[in-house]
Image (cartoon, rainbow, N blue to C red; front, side, top):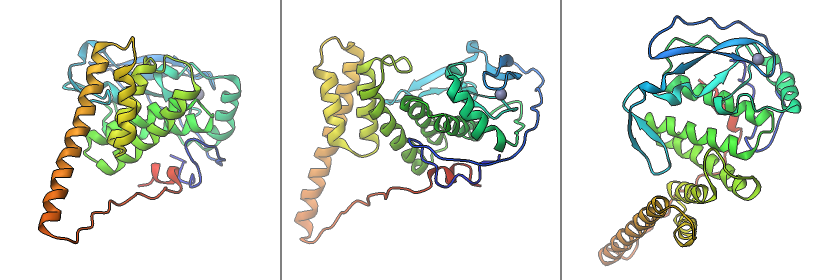
Amino acid sequence: MGFDNVHNLKIYKKDDPTKDDVKEEKNAPKLSPIYDKEVICPVCQNTFKARALKSSHYRMEKKDTDFFIRYLSENPYFYDVWLCNKCGYASMKIDFEKIRDHQIELVKQKITPRWHGKIYPEVYDVDIAIERYKLALLNYTIMEAKSSKKAMTCLKIAWMYRILNDAQEELLFLKEALEGFNDAYYNEGFPIYGMNSFALMYLIGELNRRTGDNEKALLWFGQVITAPAVSPKLKDLARDQKDLIKEEQQLLEKKKQEESEDTTSSTDKEEVPTKKKGFFSKLFGK
Ligand SMILES: [Zn+2]
């Protein structure tokens, strides 16, 4: 797609891409429950058809504890990113129009010259969704968008990897989401993607738990549980996750005791993942 050479680009910092050219996206024939929505690109003024899913077709199965909704039906996450195939501007649809003048310039300078264009099939799948979320993430990064936007995109990429049962990639993106939401919590105004400060506190706790930092998770959950004016539903969620950690810790303690009774020499060092280099170089790798 023209983004092979992005080795040194970091999500929460910025960097410099180079050049390529553009093709037109073909309009797909209409297929229920998918339809085309006419959108004007705020960067290049191109009018294009964004594929969308009729909300009447959503059938929710359940919600994971980090707010990921599992669907029985066609998956609306697959259609969450809008992409202008003329200039390469991409973002989650909720943000598509929310682009400032200096950000438009950044997309024109750093995305458009390298954009090859890409033709997608009529129906999107999880792999296409991942690719499109990563394109959005690249755009947000290039245009120096708020941490919350990059964090939410990373969270959704993690969810897509969860669909694929790719725990390693999921963890990578959960960590990136956590970093961004931490920053957003202290530096941005609320609501953030519909979350008030308590909902985000809970989510940060849960992302800490899912990425293996139980101590921090307990601190965040504790704040949600003890704060006044938190919805009972959110408090229950925080309590459940706190209990889950406690149960796991007790199980671990029990296991350690049993092991120390069995043998005197036991080493169970967990491998600490090293800070990765060239995050974006992997995003579009084949
Ligand atoms: Zn455009």
